[in-house]
Amino acid sequence: MPTPTLKALRSGLLLAVLTLLLLLALEGLTRTFLRLRADAWPQTRLSAFYQGLETTLRLYRAHPYLNTAPREGIWIATFDKAARLNGGGYRSPERDLIKLRATQRILFSGDSTTFDLLAASNERSWLWQIESQLRDRDLDIEVWNAGFPGWTTLESTIALLTRDLDLAPDVIVLFQGIHDLQPAAHHPFDPQYEHGHADLARRAAGFDLAPLALVERSVLLESLRDRIFGAPDPWQRLASGGRSPHVETLPEAALATIERNVRAFVALGQSRDATVVLVTQAVRLRANHLDGDRSYLAGWIPGLPPDRVAIELERVNAVLRHVASDTGAHLVDAAHAFDWLDTDFPDPMHFSAAGSERFAHFLRSRLETLLPAVGP
Image 1 (cartoon, rainbow, N blue to C red):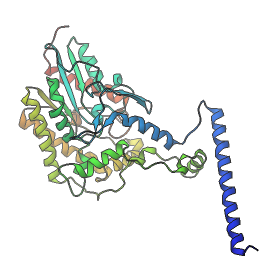
Image 2: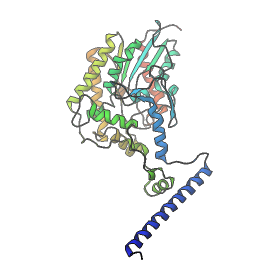
Image 3: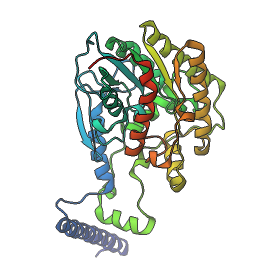
Image 4: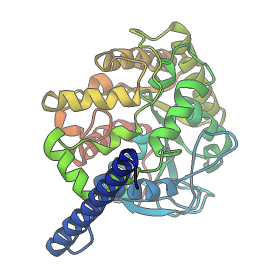
């Protein structure tokens, strides 16, 4: 005859099985109901987010000297955006790597802000708009987008040496600074950028993500959680896991390392008789999105309090100004000269469609004075 303990175990097991079957039935009914209202079977936001990340990761490949590198000749469409890299790994039209004698080439180096990560397509990016505007002025111009998401001045300098100088650019533009705040704010500071940047950049790009738990794939549980706690932002899953202690101000060693990188970048460009242009950057805490923007910066630059990011970026901009004055590189002080608006940004760092258009017009007018007129 079963003991009371055995009876309790059987009852508990039966209750667990019935509860599981009930949840599975409710999950199936929820998915069926949502399927009848849409043209596809529903999935959780995290499931859709993971699918988008898997597509995005096709842009990246391993590289012996760079943390991550662009995959040549790839085309992706994800998160309502499309990006195409040509055979050289640039977000630019497919062109011969060997330059024609009469053609003027402008090469832009930088990070996701140069890549124009949030542009709906290549043609909507601010670099393509600059080329279009210059060609409308009867200039035989090619603009090459050498920017890549997650890169710092270190990766841009390595890429310039090992790849970009082979394009024989006439003008080389460095639009960078924000991403260097990652390693600069890491404690203790690592001048090789391995700690506080390489690991975080790979995680932010979507590498090494923990697999989704079964409950995170449940449409029913997601709906209930949203009603109780509100809908979380899936991008927060990419935020840094182990954060270094906050530093209130960047150490001088970090600024010296950034100066080292920028000086090397300028010297490489000038060694090939190219005109080098340094462009300062800005971040924006938008008035109507303060909490979200602070959360974004806290995840991407975990070593700095979000309200210190703009202040410390200005110190990095000061490094670019100093290097420009000391080396003969041209300076476009966009941080001060451009009339930044909240509508220029959908997050604290990247351009909106309106921001891309405004910035393209601003920078094109500065660059045009550096280019000799070429007939149609």
